[in-house]
Image (cartoon, rainbow over all chains, first blue to last red; front, side, top):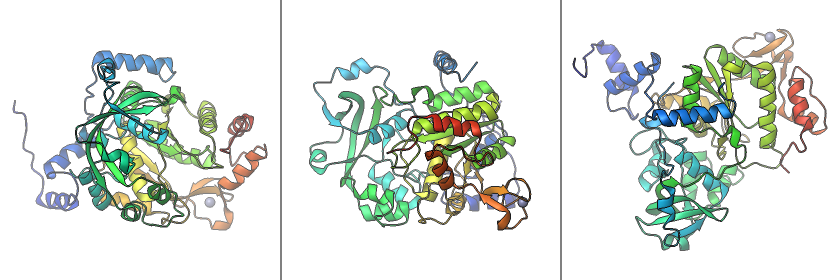
Length: 68
Length: 379
Ligand SMILES: [Zn+2]
């Protein structure tokens, strides 16, 4: 499987996104669409905490009453 | 949950403290105050992601002029370290110094560059005014003339007050994940909750999975509610009137800048780093006096389609005697004469006299909690 796929979007949508991105930190329309889709479809960025650290955090959260 | 601002959650807490502390007799020490410590810990724990230290000249000027870091990432409040000219003079690029607090080294600061700045320009760009009556302008005018940039490495946390409520972004992120929350609304506060606040929070919570109440703990003015009072009041409110599974409260150690619209963006960015997807912005958010238009803090969000956290705007809320409910300007058709505003001044006066405000203004349990405190206000 390839690492990336091409998706087609209508010219008008592309143009209006491009217009909106003027002055923002997005390099291009592509980058914006990826972030936007991840956000709206709730695809979260995997946290890079290791299992050991995550367990330590869960332990603290439990001891403080934040987790059961 | 949303990814951290700028794409990476910063963690600048030293793993090998002993290695660094070996240099205790070699590196210079600079004594810093609690305000600096708050900034240092926010950098180290990732509240200010993607910042890894205090801003350099290029980023500082970009924040002033474009409301963005030099790489284009939205950033509206300068996070800077000012230093007395004479002390700064001796520092050189690449030099490592210890920040000293409570007589011990708490962080390592690696000098990047030193630069001068115009206080008037800082004030007018960040606060929209150079009027010395503005508390933010006052702070800027009292700063030293030299700013020093560089990365921070935290040796140990010094902010021990309210430690049981002091969660860092990586911890809230684990917490939200464990709770299975996807849409998370953040609420910023510096006040004890009345029914108007509860209404706004619950309106937002109705449409999401969880509410993150995040009181800002920091320097206070005379007459402000004490931090402990705010925390205790919220504890009582959430125990009695919220579902335990839908609400989390932890504190944010930070300074209020009273920068209105720019600060609304800053507040959003910090909550994004905690993992929140939405942020409640009220009327005159982070404003002071009449320095800002009441909705300037709403309009500024138009400039940031790339912010990565969604603002929820509330224009107003009051009790309508005709609706017999708490309403906002979008849902109640009745004229002003039917509206009772939630007057902070009135509530404050009653509480200071040891009286419980009417129950359509404040929950009686909350009022009782506040009255029972030894001291309510900053003296
Ligand atoms: Zn009404």
